[in-house]
Image (cartoon, rainbow, N blue to C red; front, side, top):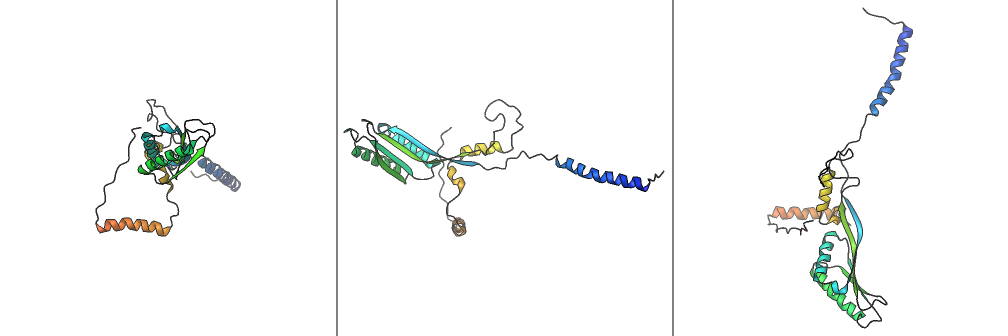
Length: 222
């Protein structure tokens, strides 16, 4: 049986329906939740590297360690300073110069070509000279706010409602990057130089020339 409403009642019901629409739409808007997928990139952090050792301990092992770290993390010239005591005849400027020259030669033999060397007077230092090494160091880290998946680093497996998908992969990848500075790209690169670089790669492949074997990076096991 069809039921008819008076005109005044129909107008009232229509008004109620129109008033309810914004409330319904507002309720739908409040149901939005942010995603759990990480979209941030690996971070590159810059920090000064500094080493201070007695000149007697600046041997071949020391040079090899500095060269290895420099090849992986450096982003500029290496600063080498050798100290001496102007009032001590066993720790003279000449001896500091000789020590610095020897270290520069050893570092260049390890592949470090850009070395700035100088000597520094330190009054009252005594017989023992010191070697100071510094350069800008770069390291790769997981994106800000990224944690590894529960159970990755230890045996404790607890729910982590704040974990973002992809953070574990980004964290482990950052630990394996050999030269983090490369993630920042190249300086002074325009469309011409970038295109020329791509063309050089294509031309080698097109010519059929055999590529030279690639040497792997050294692994520390850490």
